[in-house]
Image (tube, rainbow, N blue to C red; front, side):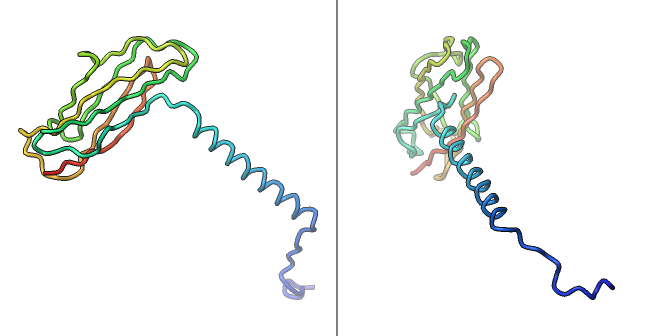
Length: 156
């Protein structure tokens, strides 16, 4: 009996019971993925933001309010909370805090949050061209770091 004497490919299809088991495992994996995604979607995030308007005049005549929302999602009070907001091209967008002169936030107890507001304005001295300008929010809570990026559109 040689290698080439057998008929067909020699592949046996699994029985119906094995197929049902494979389908059940795939269904459980899909259900786990959907539930995990839903939990992560509704879980509080440490750093969120809201922008009152995404367009700024290049002349610097108007402002937009950026609200940064910091939440302590850990089980302990965060004592050293620092915020840094910067434009990818320094000097193009002026960023001024409405709440404080400092970048340090008061301690945030567990499961509490803080809102800090900033005014964004295009810097007319920078001779900005119309287009999208990227900004970054960096927050450090004790040893944990969070980053969000967003863009504002500058129009003439």
